[in-house]
Image (cartoon, one colour):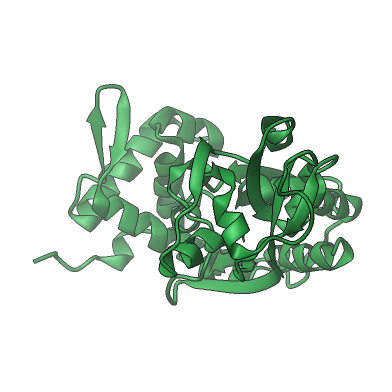
Length: 301
């Protein structure tokens, strides 16, 4: 049985030290970022080990590995620190003077279509704000919970009460191919679509596109001639061949110059979502960022 945590034995500064060590994987780097002596960081972690009755970190070779209990504490600490910051911070967010950092997790689609416009719009109002873009892959929700990202943008469903979300738009799929492809004559029937040789974008191997989910649910299978982890360079892959690829309609306008585009006969639009957690829900700065995401999507629709 886990012993009760003595809340009075710790404080917000100690939790901040824990969170920083967790993210940096180093007592030394945490001390440097917090402008503390390393001995203070070591003492603080040792104190927290007693509070939570857990080693919190163990060493494997040169790596500092957090324990499962440490991960639990860090997630909860992030919420507490965010709430405390919200209480102590001024009510209004001053974009013109802000030097805050926002970390956004997303993938190729969002980096191509949303992020450039979003960054330009944000920096026009907040020239000193720091923006970090990290790859979401299929682990976007984990990155939010581990506080490796503040905001997640992409075709991600909300998973449980820990997350907030907003649908930005729905994007239908289109099929792209070389204009010389014999099938490049007009709208495709499902039978014609299934008969094509396809390039399938795996998005790292752990994500299944919505149109593929629908096809499999209907008992159909594509003839896949090639798999690639990303849409990057897809036009060069299929130009001059009889291969076809299925992507979101908005992305096709970005990638499909010189190609034949036709609606995918599978009715399966993908919903692009914005997802965040309670840690940033009430933050004035993060509300400002989320509002800019919505405005950017509307302006570029």
